[in-house]
Amino acid sequence: MSMNRAVAIMGPDGKLLMPNLVFGKLFADAELFDRINRDAGANNGKCERQITLADGRAFWVETIPMDGGWLVSAYSMTERSAKARTDTVTKLGNRLMFHEQLAELLTNPDRAGTGAALLVIDLDRFKAINESLGRNIGDGLLGQVAERIRSALGHGDIVARLGGDKFAIIQAGAPQPQSAAALAGRIVDLIGRPFLVEGQLIDVAASAGIVLFPAGTADCEQLLKNADLALHRAKGDGHGTYRFFEMAMDEKMRYRRNLEIDLRRALARGEFALVYQPQFNLRLNAITGFEALLRWQSPTRGAVSPLEFIPVAEDTGIINSIGEWVLRTACLEAATWPGAQNVSVNVSSIQFKNQNLVATIMSALGESGLDPRRLELEITESVMLDAGGTALATLQNLRQIGARVALDDFGIGYSSLGYLRSFPFDRIKIDQSFVRGTPNDATGRAIVRAIASLGHSLGMATVAEGVETEEQMARIVSDGCTDVQGYLISRPMPPEQIGKFLAIRGPNAQ
Ligand code: C2E
Ligand code: CA
Ligand code: CA
Image 1 (tube, rainbow, N blue to C red):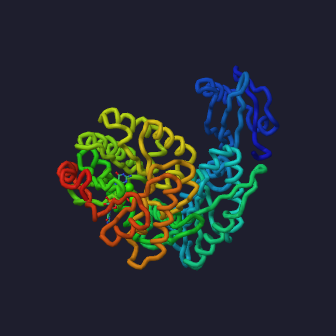
Image 2 (cartoon, rainbow, N blue to C red):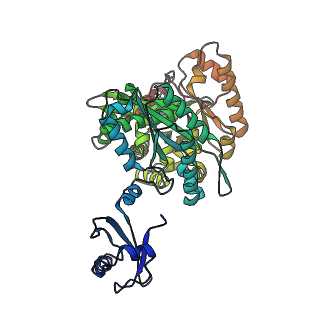
Image 3 (tube, helix red, strand yellow):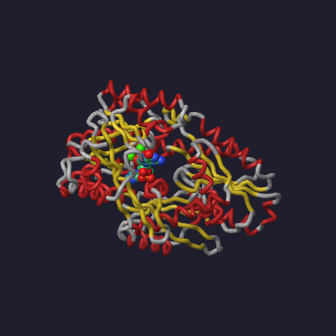
């Protein structure tokens, strides 16, 4: 607040109680006080209006309700305009200021000189910090981040906080792309160093997206969108890095957006189906279960692989409703099988974050009448990473219901033994890449053996996935796996073929 801000306290009757010196000098008009009083009275104590003095000077008047009246403050319109363009947390410019500056630069290409760059920066993990340490610390951190960004800027660079933990910079009149790359690199480095906020040591990382202009686009929104796409890529490529926008990112985004639109309709239009791939137990020499695999037959795209649409469904949250459909359908269909084979359903880590998962599974079981012990949920390690402590509680709930749990795609990713110890999985599914490998792949084979023996000592079954040849089969048998799944046993099949398949291949035929 500036030193010469005009402030006063006004009683409920509109009488001025304590005008400060500036207020007293500027405003002496009883009629004006009346008006403020009436406005505030009619509006829960709040009045905001512009007033113009007899000499033509314009002021902005605001009231804040307080005990027995209002606090009135007035400041010049220039000050108001600056205030409207300043972010209160970081004291940087705000979104409004940034848009105005960007628009001006775009209409004045001369100012851009040799070229200009737009950078957007955002913090990784900020939301978690804000939630766990509180808003005060969050705000304190943002203030320090703003300070570090400011310290990296060159003369004439414009910086703003666009909102949340997102900052933007316009760098004009510097040789590109090297100047933007240098600036982004510096900022990512500076923000990557620890912060001390109210006695708390905080580690964050920043990612940055950069778009150069003028280069085709001359539209603020498009530029910001492109910078966002580059930012998104930077995050995808590992946090604490920066990326330049490329046209291909836009195309990829468009493709994903169209896929998303089709995906949203697919459930209601009945375009999904499940196919089932048999799982063979080596000790019992029998088909003991089937994995449900999702298929999407789109009228316009044809058959779309789950490897392509599941990630989009996960990013957009559509996986929650699709996953529920999969669970219900798999339970209903498995309940009609001639034997008591298990049905394995893939559950995404996004579904695990959903509070309703256990209730949905119970309802799917109840509706279908399927014995809970016949349902196996396949999860990946990302469930433990993404859903954290709640994941473990959910797993325990599922176990209590009687369902089985398998750890899918083991061997790739983190493959932390800690996860195996933290929950007694029924089965470990060894990722196909180790099972198939290359014929002389010694490492892959050693991994399969190690997992099989680990499973044995932990009392967990081990399923070798993706077995295609007799040779691979012989290998995994000698490596000690307990179960097999793969094209050698059978490709996934539609539900109507299961009865016939079991008649020929089951229960003890191979
Ligand atoms: P996954 O869970 O590892 O499933 C096994 C994948 O390997 C399936 O591909 C299956 O058809 C394929 N496969 C099985 N045996 C062989 C083999 O011998 N050789 C080869 N080359 N491939 C084999 P699919 O059906 O395309 O599914 C791919 C992935 O999509 C699955 O990998 C799973 O992560 C995901 N997915 C499929 N259905 C669902 C679902 O209902 N929900 C969720 N969340 N994910 C699903
Ligand atoms: Ca699976
Ligand atoms: Ca798998």
